[in-house]
Length: 384
Image (tube, rainbow, N blue to C red; front, side, top):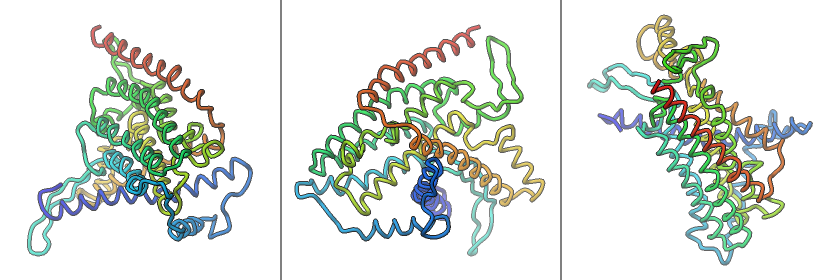
């Protein structure tokens, strides 16, 4: 956490910042989804409460907080109350392990009669050497909150929704995991920071003993793993229970799925958890296949040199460099989130047999084939 009190405090504040960032992005995404749905369906969307309907989010928050507390008579109270809280934990843990920008340095300074620093911070909640393994382990815990809600509600519709959710998530995690194995094979590391670093500069790779460089394309993972990127995106829809894979909470069939008996603030926590998984999936897709926080054709060192030339070597240039890359990463995240929103209002929901058939008979073989092809090309290029 740090060598002294100030460094420990700043790292703790950084963790709080990333958690609050995820929570505060949810109302914005809800507004964007409502406005986006209106745009797609040729209507206005929320536009009455406040400018562009922005204050509608505050009205929704008041509604969630003021709703009457309710618990089913046959509910298991510990599981019923624990499920919404537990829904926030996996997405929060996974999001904090994703790098949002390069390191920035705070030079040594004097304050309160003593010397502090120098410090080096990363725009990341915590750095884990095996970041992918940690994120997959944390994100997979989300199914437990769904099962807790389904069983704890004492409702057959909730239980059916929870069973659907668990089988769906397990089915699509296989294809998702195999695409990530191919990514690890390409980059040769489990560290997300190293993956971002390896995607700098123009597209260049070694092919059968010859270096190939394509100057007009960035060195992003999408050009090495186009099939894997598409499979990862499709599996992310299923993992976050988004249309066309929202069978666990199909309103027309299961009332509201595993959270049928939830309302008010507890229901809001489930919403935050679902959107949190969307944010994590978007951030991972960008980190693996779209250069992470790096700008195309301009490395973080080159941008830092530009800032240092303008503002001098010090905290200002280092902080501006980190914030620029943070803004780039967030811009990429919102592009992917808009794809999530657009697909919801474009594609119809699958039948459950279609969903399972797609996961086991289509996506899993394609993910296996993509991994096998990647391994063959990798071995052939290394042994040439």
